[in-house]
Image 1: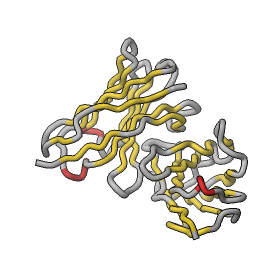
Image 2: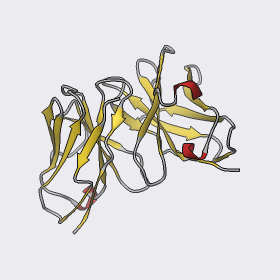
Image 3: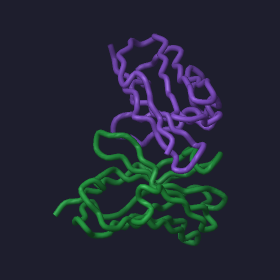
Image 4: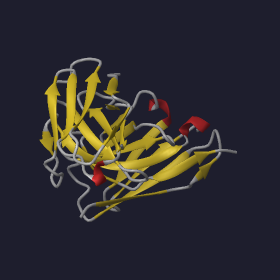
Length: 118
Length: 107
């Protein structure tokens, strides 16, 4: 059974850079698209960006200049970096796998809550 | 960006009832439409992809239909575990976008 586990700091200061890691277990990281998706408390879902296992990336233009997603296939990990944080970046951050296309998210992590506050 | 809307934003229903949720895209997305269920404090779960294909392991009481700009998720007989928030999502163009959600709670 494929499992995804996000990890990272729960509290980050404004203007700093958020770094999150998603570790994949129980399945291959190859031949899939891997996305980061976030959900502000009590609100809806926002796609942040994806990386293909080969390293190809695509980002949401609303965050494009602040986002970097990378993958380490040997460790079966993907990473998210989001810079210049503000309170609006406070959210539950999920990593997810897409199987049928870039955006059909069939496996999700449980999410990690990130609060941006001084 | 393609804007997704859902109606209603919330509904109350009883166990055994038939429930229908509508999703509309701001432009044609052919059949590139997914449905997710999110229970409280849990990650979303893929129910239906490509507008009408049931994800493996999802009960057959869930069904999806539509193409172009108008889509429907139907739960034929609501079960206690179905009380949740449902999101549609377009996978036609980047950035992929989600609808605002429809919360289904107990009448």
